[in-house]
Amino acid sequence: MVLSDVFFLALCVAHLPVSTFTLPFEQKVFMDFGMDANEEGLMMRDVEYGSAMEELPPVEPTCPFGCSCVNMVVQCSDLHLYYVPMEIPRDTKLLDLQNNVISELGENDFKGLSNLDTLVLVNNQIARIHPRAFLPLHNVQKLYISHNLLTAIPKNLPSSLLELRINENRIKRKKLGSINNVIYANMIFCLSEMGQNPIQSSGFEHGAFHGLTLNYLRISDAKLTAIPKNLPESLQELHLENNLIQAIEPYDLSHYSNLVRLGLGHNRIRTIDHGSLVYLYNLRELHLNNNRLSGVPTGLPYMPNLQVVYLHGNNISKIEVNDFCSDSSGVMTTSYSGISLFSNPVKYWEVDPSAFRCVNNAMGVQFGNARK
Ligand SMILES: *[C@@H]1O[C@H](CO)[C@@H](O)[C@H](O)[C@H]1NC(C)=O
Image (tube, rainbow, N blue to C red):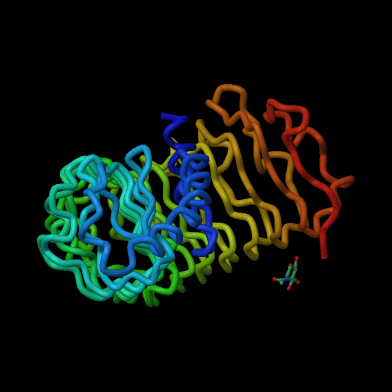
């Protein structure tokens, strides 16, 4: 569980600029081949261009013109393609079409590609997707379609899908309703980094996520002003960094008790109401860095699984002896591996060291000077 958390976090969290987008696995194959392909691709173009083309014997296995195909990875990025190329080998596992000018996905574009597990369509101009376009992809697990012109979540996403990245499109808040009736078990829904999708309020349409069993959701750079209330209860990771959230109110987190990681960094949080963290008894990591907190939130000592708290970059000027650790020995108490407090106005030499008596790691508290 921990391992897979870390893995998905790594996949989803990074804000990768489009031009340097790479996949986190088989990167070597990917890159090495890309380099070979440039030379060979150009040479082939010179040879094939002209009347001799039809006389050439068919090349086995096939590979779309200009693309490179090796080890079931088909690499067709940066080719100024207007369409998904034909003749994609049927055993392809990874199809990379990023950085082209594809505007539409047709019904038969992915026909026969039942072996595909990763489809990369990042940074095209896709505005329309045929409702049956993804149906042949029985085994696709990752669909990266960020940086396009979509106005709604695509219909009929394959039920095998584990991760959808669809940030930087033109999806309006009310269009989120269109994923209503679909259940993707354990889907990692990086809807997310939902950045630049113009969701400008705290709430999603009621039931926008109804029926979804998500365990990861990331909605950042979306101008949220409060914690959304109708997200799936199944969530284990919720990332809401880089929004405009100002407060956490008593019941904001009440049905997210499955959360293991909560990311609220880089918001404008000034107040966390007393008792609002009490529901998070599974939480291991709490990220509240770079907000406007003037004190440590209450309730931390009673979060039995809490291990890591980021509070750096706030306006905390005072730390009380029981802010982090419980004062009564009978109560199940937190045992931290890391607390970050640097970039706060608190004078660390004035803090009672026993405030950190339940930190299990000598290097676990990062103080340092206020970086201002
Ligand atoms: C930081 O806290 C102090 C009081 O401790 C307050 O006077 C000040 O306005 C706060 N600064 C910000 C940026 O909120």
